[in-house]
Length: 203
Image (cartoon, helix red, strand yellow):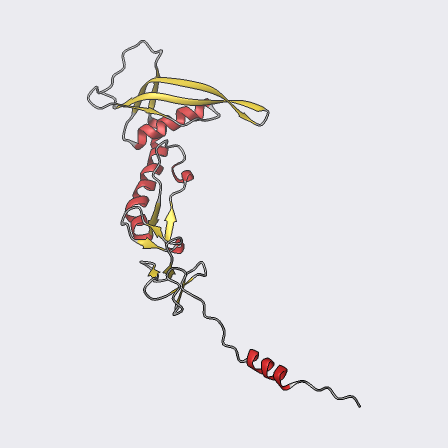
């Protein structure tokens, strides 16, 4: 019977390698080995370098924190909501940014309600072409010119102008005009329209 003889030095190396302590992970900022805090992205931080979400107290690093546009506090991505372009689809200058829940209810919700009302009231906004030569009964003391974004449909450009006017509290748009341009999607060419008009109040 064969006997396998393992030198004592090899045995010692095997034993010592099994007992070798694991290397500690260092703080992602100061490289301190005393890391107790883990960001949602997976990076570790020491006590002095750790920041926390203002709402849920989750640890967040500089790259992961989001500043609320209204209150200026720092939050993790789970505790903020972004205003999407579709939230104010027909407005050219729509609100934007990230908001914490409290500021969303305080700032964004009233604007969303105002926009929903404007879409309803747009049906009652009168549009008068710039080519109209008759007398327009409009209050001259409160007027404002607006221009829409570009739309593939001319009627939708006009509707957008009505929504914008209603959103700002106006009931009439006069001097209505359209600008057209040609856009391309690959080899496909199509027309886009933008509407401009002066919004005011009926006398």
